Image 1 (cartoon, helix red, strand yellow):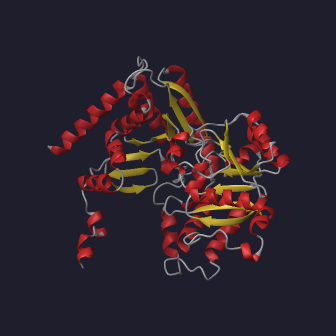
Image 2 (tube, rainbow, N blue to C red):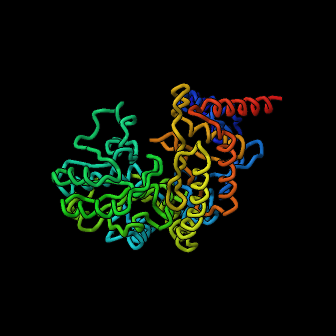
Image 3 (tube, rainbow, N blue to C red):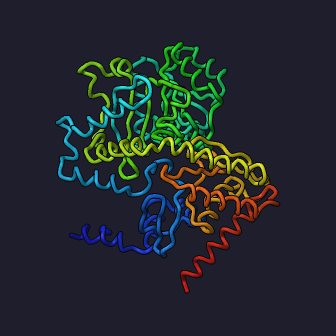
Length: 460
């Protein structure tokens, strides 16, 4: 009973105040992250969400242009997904000693709509788990040790996924990681060719668009040539579509931009419709059989929660809505117009260095400040995101591997008017700092002033 009395109950959590949440988060989750979120104004208590819109406890509404890092392709709390979840509420959710009909249907659907000859599915809970499954599959199928990926890539933070993530900042504290991992520049074919021709690599894993690297689109033909080189050298071509998949870049899969047919593909984020954690690692039948095609190897890679009924039901309905409503094509049209508007701003406004992207996966990179404190120079993107939130009620974030780049990844259901509102807000911020010369200090001071004003207003 004493332990029960120490619990914070669900009812207490739902009735908690913003100060309660900040205290719990700082004490029991991550104090430094709590400080950063507070600095950029992201310490609000959000109490409702639907589609593109999120509301806070003060009654203000925000447009979500972060979209769960690409997880919210259908927006927040899509009613059909909630209904799908309710429709399986009385079925066994986790029953490993059975063949789950909903999970089986999801696997069949993924095989039918995926690029190339992808057929076999391993259902899991996240993008990192899907990448782990892909790396293990590659080693088991080829008998090779080496794993090759790209500099500035991001594939997850579990040990295997982190080992092929191309940023030293994330890897260094955890060395030694998985042995045999090497990195080549993204978009540069010659170093890739030199590496793969050694015949040492089980897989080359690559993002069709580097998300956390700063929304980097590869040169035309690079991925196709990389795929052909993998075929020639007996290396598995592994596409990480965790962030790009399911309509984000204007096609159902980003692979379709280059007519790619991967040997293995990792999928997650938006597969769960923003409602449940679910991921998948797909492979060709030939690759799967080489790795696990004997009874004594059939249980080498499993997951307790992977393919559970509720997650599978939501994922099935997510796929249905994406295709029924033709959301990939809508993302292509809307993204092209949004990108054109932002690129026009970059030509006129000195704060913006470059605008890049495909579909509704767009990055805006700012010139790296040459003066001011180090933490300010490295996080100009965070300052802009803070101003977008404070001044214009637009939620955004910077990319992990390039903090001076902010991402726009709204739900694919975003309206033209909402895109216009975001573009207008960014233009206002950048235009008001037209004479900004090498330092983010003014932006940060403005952000802090707005933050203090909001805190004072709430206290009186």
